[in-house]
Length: 341
Image (tube, rainbow, N blue to C red; front, side):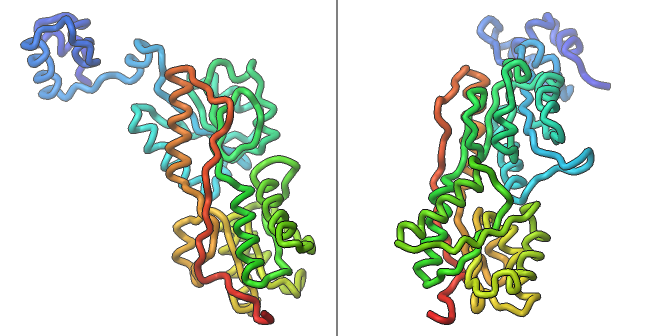
């Protein structure tokens, strides 16, 4: 049977309010002997405070929602990069005494429903397109603090944290150009005039302009940024872009699929085609050949995201500008000079 606050109060010979004050750290008006007696009984009886009662008293649910796109009622669209983010955010929230509620969103209207029905203190938007975030309006969000990860949306309802996508792609293209590659494929999901992939596309193009070169636009888009899409792309690369000597993929998991597809098609990496990714997932160090990639500081991104969101929740702080984190090139075995150089 669950031990209640009243049980502790009866055994200690004090009021329930006194026990509540001691349990919740409000001990200024309680004698040291009483504090010691209550703490001993709490430990002996294994009393655990009710989270719901604490929430009512504090007028806070201590719940932070993490909203991610869902393809349908059964599937969450979480990339390996975002899986890492989810785990790190949960850890950071736990340190701060908050609980994480993961919710898949298949229709834009479900965002407002999730925010309101669960009495969330705040929410993280992860994996949504900027145009989806742009559609959020105050009437649907209420007073819930929002933070968007990897977003370029200017929606004033959200705070943001992201990596420097433009510079990352610039570094990737510079590396391939320095090796002597000129016929390079840019592979990633379809994109609009804003957002993460658009920034990477612009940074990639800028490297050619910087070098005084014209990029023969070899743009290959995939419906889903996953290993299967990369595998299919790699298998068909030789026929679709026979003279391409390198591929820049906008995500490591896509790049790894491309390398496997190239191998199945009889092409060597990097002998025939160099491949470069983006993220620096753990997996990029375990595949053969090891993947050259643009590294994001994913743990730092998650920690800053939680810090910004909790500042908004607890102190009503709302930075005017998003936080953009540095990236760096990690050179491994999947890139080399083309054979003709």
